[in-house]
Image 1 (cartoon, helix red, strand yellow):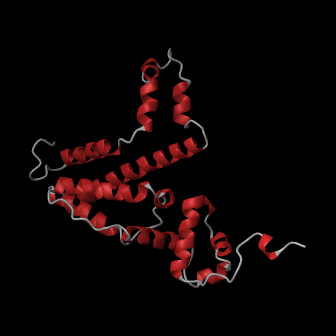
Image 2: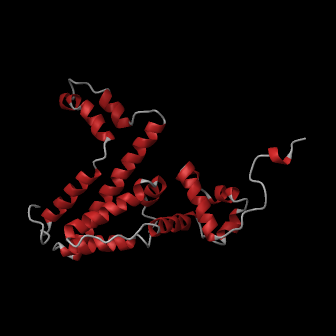
Image 3: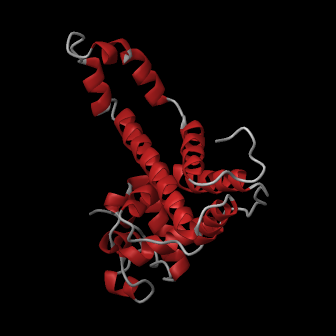
Amino acid sequence: MESRSQRPGRLGRPRRLSREAILSSAERILTEEGAEHLSMRRLAKEMSSTPMALYYHVKDKDELLTLLLDARTERLPRTELPREPRERLLAGARTLHGILADCPWAVEALTSEDHVSASALRIVESMIDAAVACGMSHEEALYAYRVIWYYTIGELLVRLNRERARRKGEDTPWERAMLSLDPDAFPLLARLRDQWVELAAGDHHQRGLEAVVDGLLAQGAVCPGTAGHP
């Protein structure tokens, strides 16, 4: 007869349900298994509970993800931002990137724009305020923020997919395409093939971010005190 200690699954008394315990278990699943494995049913099983019991504390998976994003942002120390508006705009963008760089599930959750972290809105506020201080109108500042956000989330998605391929021991589709190029049809790309793969593996976010920000400022107005920048 199978002993109790040999039976699979979680043993002992069910974990006491609270919003904090639910968020902790959900974050563990997201971190260790990925966003595609998180569901209310899977979370309930993890906590030796039922989906209906979880719904008493969180409305659905979307609210759960939003709460997790808020909690992650709130844990970050609040550092003093630069006074110079261009540097403040860059600092805000770097902060957003840093929050998400080690949190793949958040990157995927935010691409749908169905989740908004109230805590992260202070960073957005600071970035738009910095853009206005550079001489942009409110509409231009909002446009500038959106461009920076799309660049940030796009860079993170490419990085995430590349890292997934690496863990599987595979090349990315782009790398496979570059390695199989016909040099007669694509002579320039063929010459750049080795550099392409090398550059793709590097971290060039900061350089690209500065190019995006300076390009946006060149379209609008020059920030006070940014001599040497467009």
